[in-house]
Image (cartoon, rainbow over all chains, first blue to last red; front, top):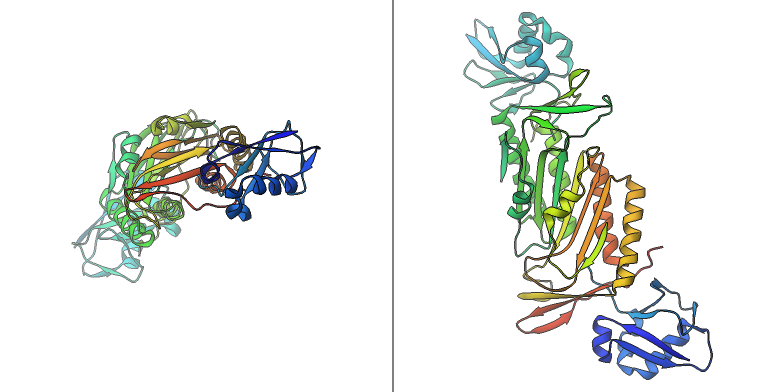
Length: 82
Length: 82
Length: 142
Length: 142
């Protein structure tokens, strides 16, 4: 299954794409699995790994949350609105 | 000497004048003396005596402050600006 | 800038007047005439009276203190007097500062202090009569 | 009312939109682009990026919580995205309430929470280059 992950800000710039894509041969997967695969496929993400947050269906998700390929996924760097 | 005292708000309404006037045969006088003479000459002020403040030259004055007939004097009821 | 005026307050002009390229935060406070109060269910208008010369001096002290204490970029406070209808602005305070914390604190300080140290009196007018609003004892600006 | 927009924010319209006959206090916060930052002495413009759908949901939660907690009469928050020049308004929040304490607290809550829970990113552009502003880890709105 293909998982598409939206990218924003410095993370989008580091990867050079608005969306990342990773493949798993099973689902659901945990957020932790999703993140480590992302870091393998996109080494540019590794430097920011400590502060990246995964959003699932527009909500911040814990590392233990599970996701499927139909969920809306996003990888969010440190926010600075206002 | 004549002392003129500006009146405002409920105090102005109670007295029915924008300015009170009291006479002393000496000066300076204390704020305490000024107030008690005002209450004698204008009995309408007595009911609010507990919360009236005297301003001398546009500053709040203590009861022990002394004033002369050339000072700008005002008797100020509870304020409610904003 | 501080002002006591009989005229309606131009809120946009107040906000615009504190714009500053070095400021990241602007806070505006507006006091408006409510259609009711704790004592009166249906207020129709409000009459404000002022001891102008003393009020201007007190407002100036609030301005100076706010600018000094919170290192404001700009400060504007305008209090209107006379008769105002429900919804009209009686007081407008705008401040700009580098960061939001200072802007909020300074603006709140200004309105809190205006209510204690500026000689202003308001009278509530309703269908059933009028009454001077119970206020607080005037405090020294010192 | 909450909104994410590419267009310049009409500050007068924001302020006017929270007017309410039952309100005695209106507080408006404006975040504006500064000509400098802690890291950059001369900022020329700022670029804001947003995860629109999630940002709208987070703003809506802030609105609901502010109205509920401080019994606000009205609440408006608009965040602009895209490229803005120094002095331009990036965010405007206006609230009206019966009394000033609630209005100040609710407005400050809204901007403090926007900075933590709304997915927005800003990039500072200066003569010497550009950099993403160091922010904070996104928090859940729950």
